Length: 301
Image (cartoon, rainbow, N blue to C red; front, side, top):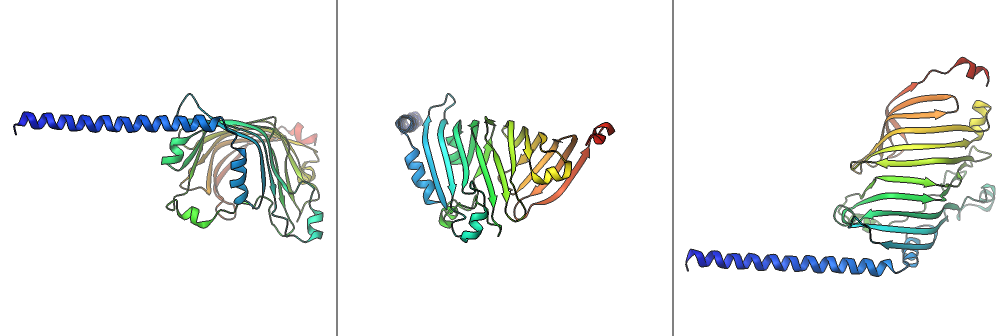
């Protein structure tokens, strides 16, 4: 067989392989689009509710959950309405201790509406949950600690085999924009040393990130706390945060801060450092620079 015939045959073989691969890709894309179109016309809330309630020590209700196309495919849009999570973490407490907790102790989270999108490609191939343009409306959170230290948020019961089946690699997390709109109260109550809850009311909160896991936080609001009142004789302390936070999935328990501007009442400071949350929170390194405070402000306290 001549060289020309060999080359001609090879060309036909590679051409056939190429067209076959193209056909597989086209069929795959069509199937994905059809699946998304089918799912986008369905309310997925009952399915998600059933799966979630199998893996939490509590009860989750979901009014609506829909997914749909996004202009930047394979990014998929997501929409959630009326999310509520009730914790059962305190069900085993003695009746006397349970009666001393606030009436909202079991209500862990409520959410009126959420919309955003996620990258399905990064989720399937890189095991990374990548969120885009997430907006949470009407978010309310209650964090309650019982007398023995039991928290109401200790409700996740993931089977060990599901973690091991992922090859030991922890899923990553990334977000490029995150905002809270019309948030509700965020309460913190520790039964061991509190007589009333610390209540956080946010007026503005947003997180913006880059392609790398680097985030900028902007938070404004006020907090009512019995301890803060004792320290400052003020019923409310206004606060603000502005700066950068670094987090990487390879070290999920370590958070680094760079030039975080903290504002609390009359105090302004710049904070940089690292905090390790793997077990008990440990400040590995840090720097605090207090800004000058006018003496006239101190005399008015």
